[in-house]
Image (cartoon, rainbow, N blue to C red; front, side, top):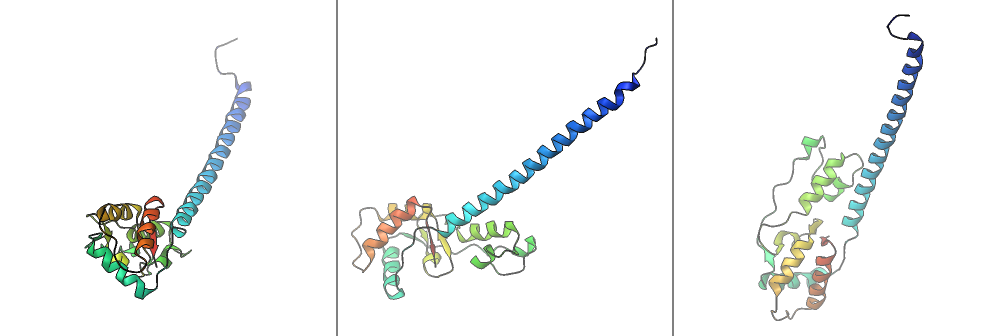
Length: 182
């Protein structure tokens, strides 16, 4: 009897290793599928959160005096929007708009880039004035609503129709991730 390798055990050991390898590969594929499912659910939850924010509707003739009164009370941030992001760097050649965010042909990153751009927060307190002056699907964030309420402070209410509803709406929006201007 000599010292050496027992070749009779090699196939069994090799089969055991291959079996373990296959089990690990199955687990890895299941984890990848689970990760993809979780990511899809996260995306859907983000979309639903953004889609179903607090809503309040004012006809334009009532809305504009409210915006003016909001500005007069220092609740607006006099800022310009940042430049539109270049979606072509993501292989998407359509304009930056809410429809691009929901386009099934758009890469997932486009959705996030568009939503982030629509939710840009001004560098000064208040609601970015450009968001209330258009129906561009701007997302007025909870932080903007909060700072607007803080800027309002104890000032006398505006004597315009709908002012009380507007201020109450801002308080709700502050606690509910803001609102979409549409």
